[in-house]
Image 1 (cartoon, rainbow, N blue to C red):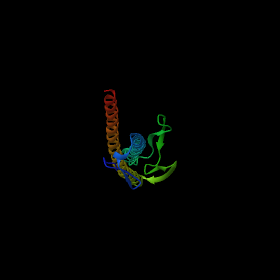
Image 2 (image 1 turned 30 degrees about the vertical axis):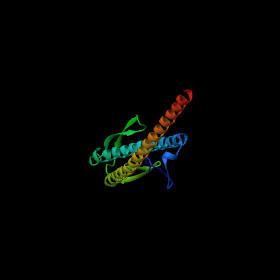
Image 3 (image 1 turned 60 degrees about the vertical axis):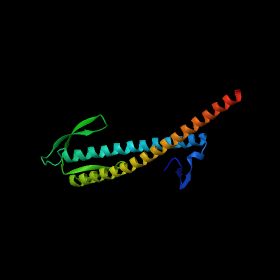
Image 4 (image 1 turned 120 degrees about the vertical axis):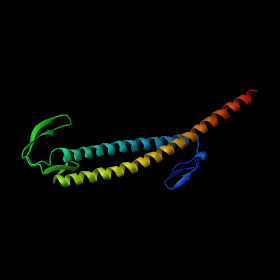
Length: 166
């Protein structure tokens, strides 16, 4: 965790005030990259959670519970291409359990599976959100110290020039 007094890295504390502007720029660049990577991961987790929520919604409200025999459905071939089909068994569905593997489950088990996935991802998202917030705070502290160093060096450089020209 970064503070005005230090930057936590691998268990050691480094005082930000003792770092040069170039070193602070390197730390800032690293934190920028970490925040960007973590933000991308956050977006991917949120997208996965939305996908599982949609699957859960379909299993719960997609009419799969009715036992009216063959029920007409649209079967997705791609994200934008669907074909007509008929659902022969409304009690059993194929569940994508990851990496292209599908498992046949009854609708109750499928609902439990998707609810567990949504809950698990919510916990992961919450933890990642805290990490992103901490890294963002660290980044702000480093940026502030860097800004102050740059201002101080430009003030001393302009102060040194005016005193030498007098």
